[in-house]
Length: 359
Image (cartoon, rainbow, N blue to C red):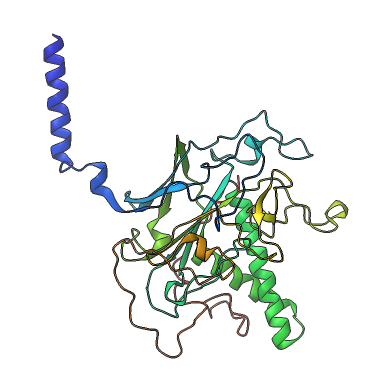
């Protein structure tokens, strides 16, 4: 009886495999990037804060893999150590909120940014990185799309929207003077459209052991992630407590977070649990990035060092860049400020990325 049941199970498994074409998990693999173990030290001198839940190896990414998953790409980011899970026993701020209440997606100690250069055309795309990262991508690695994995995606998206909106208002005012209600509304709409088209904050997230898994819909990337695209991957420490802006106690913005959930870095020993130490003296704009995937021919320590060479994206297939952009190509397809019409956007603004409503 036992033998018959086992044979039946084997026959069923064989039948299912045949119906699916014998596909395995690796058949769905689009690409895999690897990174050296033990390089979670920024420019080589970064020191982890004095915390029991965050130490050397915890923010050390060792691989980033992408898999075709129906109408989405499933990314799997694996760290050197098991990922710390939010606890209801650990308070995070003076309001008495716990880590588990602030971070509801199974992790809370890191952010992972993926900057995606889809066209591989020098001079095309954005070369700036998110607030608080302090990096600049090389001209041949400008990004059209960015995926931001963070413990508080809804709050991070709103913080980025406010930052981009203020930048658009400041630029318009500097060039054209005062801003009327109609122009402000148009700039607000243009900012939202640009954010929706370019930046995606995953909310479907799973954490298991050393790996965090998240899905990015094809409607955002325009299809499955390609091994011929360029990928810039940066890891920062995450801060999840509410930040109070100047005057916050008297009606100010209690959700202000100018570093977009990223922990900072200071010289010397870490002064607290929410800052890294080992920073350079006299360099307040030093990048606090802990781990970085870099292309061959350069090192993480060089890119994050004092000389700050431009950061080149990694191309999984090794395919060379396309021909240089012709004259007239927009170098930084940011929020349009000299023509506030919401229709005057970047060429990929029609590809609308999802933004789930806040719970």
